[in-house]
Length: 196
Ligand SMILES: [Fe+2]
Ligand SMILES: [Fe+2]
Image (cartoon, rainbow, N blue to C red; front, top):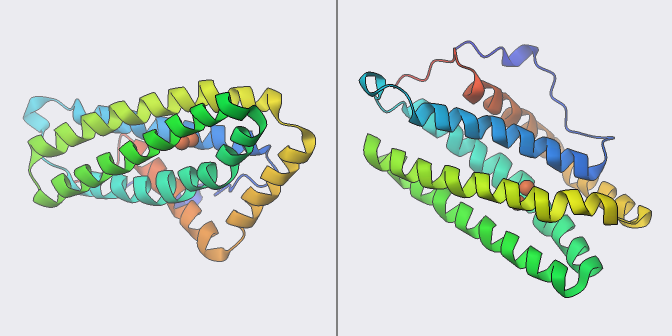
């Protein structure tokens, strides 16, 4: 496998504006999403099930997108936004929370399909996951992350910054974050080997 992960610096975003950290994590997710779409569009003669690709993707989805990224949004950003924006903010947050739940359900369906090791159900589950995932990233950036940049008062920004830093502070979280960045790089690499 040639993914050059050892030479890549693992940046946990410390020092960045908290919203920039989350937007940068969206960029990483979009790179993996593109890799999924590429995998689904491989030529028909080359469409064996590459289990290693799907297993690494599932690890990235569960550990980075859900446990790392969505968890921070739900624990820190959603409550701050809803508190600042009143009913309109609460409606946005409810919609985004519901999208997280649909995303988790889609990940579980993909995991079940990968376990059965049959190509068609994996492709079907992956297309549906990719559609939900892209729509959620677009919605969250437009309705929450970009408006939030204008709306956050300095003390709220500091609260978010401290909250994100404390969630990143343990060694276990830092190691997991680093591993997920390596996975994203590997999944996005066109010369990576995923046979089997
Ligand atoms: Fe997000
Ligand atoms: Fe989200």
